[in-house]
Image (cartoon, rainbow, N blue to C red):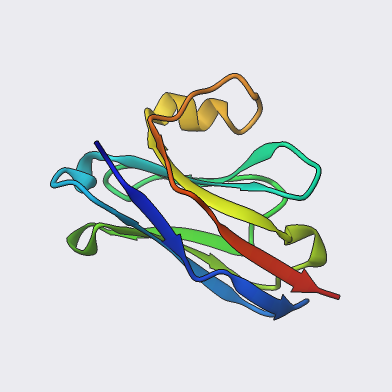
Length: 128
C-alpha cells in the first residue's frame, strides 16, 4: 500500500508561483514513476507532468511546458511541481499519482489509463 499526500496549494494571483509537494510512503519510492494531474471545476482530470523513477526523464502537457517543472527527491520520498507564471486557467485540484511509466505517458493523450495510487489532491486557485 502506498499513501500519497499533496500539499502546497493555495490562492495566488496570475503571474505568481507555487510549489506543490507530494509525500509518499513506502520504502521503494525511488522505484516509483510519479505524475501530477489536475481537475478543473466541471472538467475531467488531465495530465500535467510526469517523472521517471530515476528522475532522468520528465514529461509535460503542452499547456504547462515552459512554466511548470516536476522534480523529485528520493531521499525525502517527495515529488514536487514548481509552477511559475500561473494563469487563471491553471485553477484546479492537483493530484499526484504513481503507476507504470507507460500509463503515465498514455495519460498525456488519452483518458484510457490507470494509475496504481492517487493522492487526495490540493486546490490551486489563480485569480486574474
